[in-house]
Length: 344
Length: 125
Image 1: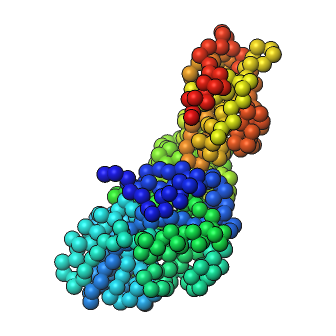
Image 2: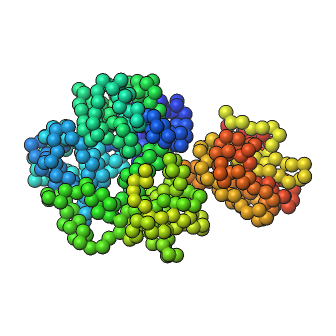
Image 3: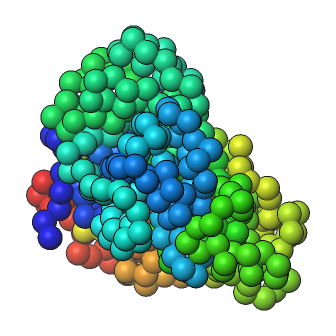
């Protein structure tokens, strides 16, 4: 399969972006530098082309019942205009993907699966939709997604689209949806609309001062906030409980994978924990984690925290908060401890 | 366009080498290399007194995204390291040919197979 480009590819190249392959897409990993882009989002405002993310629409009279069945959340609790972060599980309770579910109206929902999971999620929804009166459409190729993130994002949104949006709410403007969502932990929104309109939005927002941000800083921004990365922090063998995201489960409804979660809930299991490194050095995904001299796990995520200027990572551990651990990097042990996430 | 001073020698692995008056050589990474690495956030340098053969990994420069080995451009003994890089690894980005130097090596033979600035430019262009 040849790599896919968003309509902004040439804009990214012209801005000096370094391009990488990501889930079959050619995407910018950084424009100027990861550190300066990270800081721009924490202190000012950044704009991300995340048009590689999927857009799957579910419509029809039984949409609410269907999506309640295939996700960890009971969509009957959603009002029109609500967004909800939840997990889609297989029959063993393992996470297939995490997604935000958009309640555009009671019989019109949108899901935003990760780029690498779009086809699997679409197939999974189809496979499980037999008993429900719904239609499922993958329109990922027809929509762009831009994330505008940072303390100045609400001001730019107002200036650009003359609108405001609250956290985890959405507004529709003709064919465009603006939601109070993101992957950075900052104020801001995501703008989703017809693909051929993306260049206009991008150019206008960059003119207003939004700083282009690549996938590199997107990763450090999300890691500092303890957000999960699909394919890395979960990759087919982890349940919602193990990720520490039990708040995305509504136990008062039936859903695919619930039985496995109920069984697991009453047993002992490892949990995804944050590790903060005290020694100098950078930790990476895959590095081994040691406790009392024994290898006990490995990092699913690891990087320098540009804000803390320390190594931060995540690993599935049987250890409580505060325990001392070390992470092996090129034969050296960097000392750290298990901490509560988010890191900041 | 990358800066490539004429008075230095280079390797294909993007290190620069400066022959000192006392016969020792100072080593760092080129402007092209620091730009490709982007923000250097951590540098692991060898211990003073350690010996390396040409081509051995002798140091590591890490950006946010990746760790890159730095290879010994010549065989010899490490006689000095740039300790400022521990606190300020960004010196490699800001001043790759000056304040961002990495090590000084006492060579145990002749300097061979090094590129001049023109050949190095051809390599990266």
